Image (cartoon, rainbow, N blue to C red; front, side, top):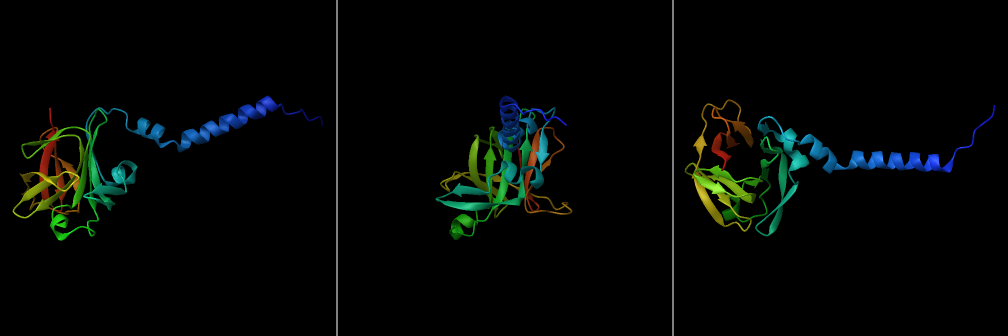
Length: 187
């Protein structure tokens, strides 16, 4: 049996092709771009959709870094590929004054209207507080605004954090247990 010699140029080509394939498979940006191409309609995202794929596992707020809770995250993905995301955070390292207001970290890539107030794209601390109120703070823990929240007594199985659609197209609810606040994309 006669063995043909392997040409160095063929080996170099095969090695380059395998390296390219490995880099493509490990490049999350390529996968993310394909996964989050424009949709036909908006979509509500649950914890499995958001988790650490879209939401950072640690977030900065008021001079500290806190862990986000992957299992308690969610969001809305608009048809054009922009997001509104939120996750509960471990606020145990903060003072009691901040802890009672700072329950979740909210990231929005688009302006949203919440309780009659427009929230510009950015990252915020937020939480549901006494007297059916929802508070939004900048990263320095400065109160930006407070909006009315509602208690959903009909909710069968409340979870710590979730996003749900409403009967009105384009409107969504951010829930913390049975408490919620409605929002929509601002024009």
